[in-house]
Image (cartoon, rainbow, N blue to C red; front, top):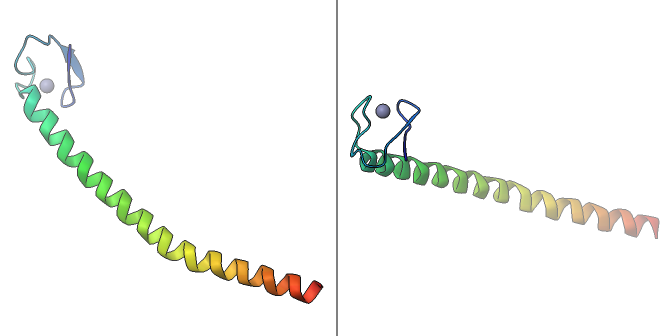
Length: 73
Ligand SMILES: [Zn+2]
């Protein structure tokens, strides 16, 4: 069975294209793969932004904790 993302219907795997909209299944797969890669790149970039913000903040928090422990001791 094949699934058409365009029409949200399931059709026979023997059919080369979607019977409703006529989009070939292979072409759809390629399109989906491209958009997935783009989404992955965006996610990776967002992760790097969070690392770039998070690491200095984490170092700052650790530094403050050390200062706090020193002032208590
Ligand atoms: Zn379709």
